[in-house]
Length: 60
View (cartoon, rainbow, N blue to C red):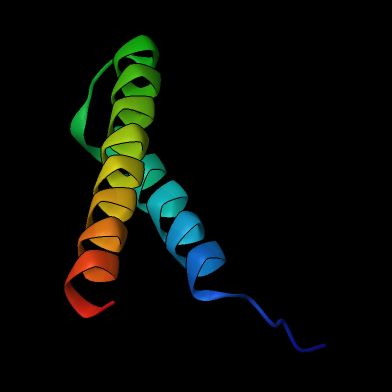
């Protein structure tokens, strides 16, 4: 089975997996882990869209 994911889909998947890992390994309580994981995911999305728009305006 071959997956054909777009660059955007892979970026979202990377953000999700990275956020889960960061939440699990950096915080002590479950509540802190969930909150930090969600926070990291939002930061990844903001960076993804920000860099995407910057590339759009710089490269046309």
